[in-house]
Structure formats: structure tokens, C-alpha cells
Image (cartoon, rainbow, N blue to C red; front, side):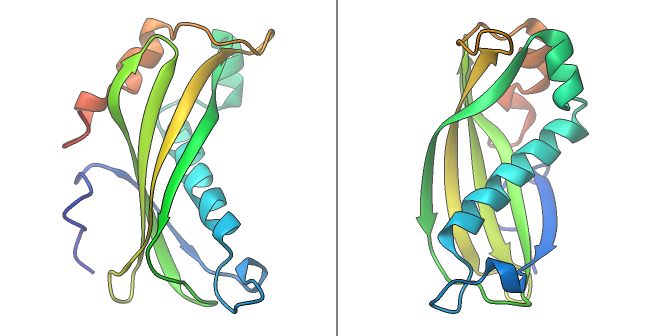
Length: 149
């Protein structure tokens, strides 16, 4: 499979299989599973960048999803191998950030879904939005990803 043209070359990628538990009554992967795959990829990318839950607790703030925008392009089926790509996009403003997602089928490169998640950085004690500290702004700066700005 070639790298999708819409995805930055340095985007985070996570491969996984469509499991029997992912399948719905229509015999394809349930749309809710697609949301979960996108969220899992975002968390794994954050972990890879050194920001796991204990690190966020140390900082006193963590990202929470505010909104999901997902286009479901093609169904996926049990046993297929998929790849989720994710990367930060759009300028980060005080407590708001955005992240893109593309999920493809590895066998043929078909796009399964595209998504844009809106995130809010919140205080871990109060649960209220807070300004991101410099270390977060630097680590998740969209300009680091080709096409991410």
C-alpha cells in the first residue's frame, strides 16, 4: 500500500485488525469502533511523544474530546488489517486543539474513514478548560507535521 497523499509522511500510524467484536448487525465494523480506533491512535501518539496519563497529571492538565467529525467512506470487515494515521492540525489556541485522522485498509489502500477531532485542554482537578503550558504547545505544534499547519 502506498502512503495516502492526504496524510503527512511523518503522521503517527497504528496498525490493527478488525476483530469479530468490532462487527455489527450489518456484518461490517461498527461506526462506534471507528471512533474508538481514532481515539486509541490519538492516545498512542500522545504516549509516543512522552505524554501519558501520569505525565498529564504531573502537568495538571489533559486533553478531552469536545467534538468528533467523521466521514465514513467505505466499510471494513472482520479479519481486515487497517492502519490509522493521526496528526495535530490547525493552530492551537489557548485551550483548543485539532487532530486529523485517516483510516485505510492495508490490502488495497482504500480509505475507510476520515476524521477531525476538536480537543480541549482541561485542568485535571477542576475539569475546566485551561491554557496549555508551553511544553504542550511545543510538543503538539502542528507545524511539525508536514501539511499539519
